[in-house]
Image: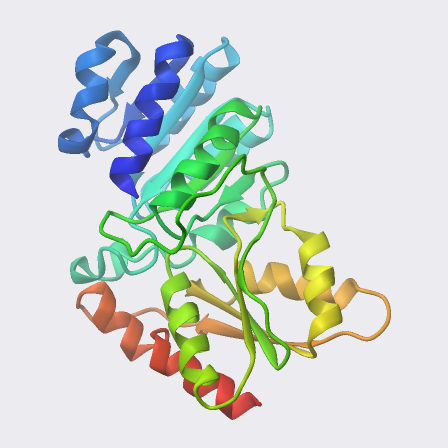
Amino acid sequence: MRDTFTRCLEAYAETHPELVLITGDLGFGVLFPYMKKFPDRFINAGIAEQAMMSMAAGMALEGKTVVVYSIGNFPTLRCLEQIRNCCAYHNANVKIVCVGAGFTYGALGMTHHATEDMSALRLLPGVKVYAPADAIETEAVMGPFLSEPGVAYLRIGRGGERHCHESIENYQCGKALEQCRGTDAYILTAGNILPSAIDAAKLLGEQGLSIGVASFPTVKPLDEAYLASVCEQTDLIFTLEEHTVMGGFGGAVCEYVCGKKGLRPRVVRIGLNDTYCALVGNQTYLEHHFGLDAEGVAKRVLEEI
């Protein structure tokens, strides 16, 4: 996902001279091709994320499209006030990129676990939130992420994620991507946890259950039209995210379903339940610990059904 992001960013910069990339003193190995080709449109702001975000807002208000790049919580939680006051309030053309979604940097401990970022950015008025599942979805969202005006947030993995799609054509902001249909329940996901949902649906299918799966590369705005169709097909929806269930993707789905007229399905949120991860380990290990792998998700679905 990270390499796909940088490749698409470089291609976009070729035809958009107003694009500027700012990094918080990291990512040079990945960003080097961009740095080499556009040295006058690259800034290393150092380990000063709050100043970096204020700088980005000022440049955006002078006509630039500014991409701010860092890992985990550093371009989000560390400078949330600057995103709110300097960027979102002024509808500045600032694009925030977090590489290392969820437990991607699990071995570095809770300071590097990006498990509250979607909640924080989703609550800011006018801010779009993208959480693609793989490199194919990342490439699909890069067009609207960079070109649509205002503040947008992109949450990606570090690389090596399993491809869940062959291709995606003409992706539009706010659209869900259905993997398969089901009647007994649906598992809706945001981010690179999608393979767990796909594999869990296969495990449950072996037990005679029909489980639908869909990915939401855009968390805000949410695909309410697709959600409405899911609500007509099943009375049980699971949301799955490598993130806290408090106010994240699951919260967004619950907000829609609670406000829906008529009969409503039950929504079960799967993710971190109002807790920090005190463990250190790779992403696979931590997903298993919190029941976010295929076996854990399948078990939870069976318990609820």
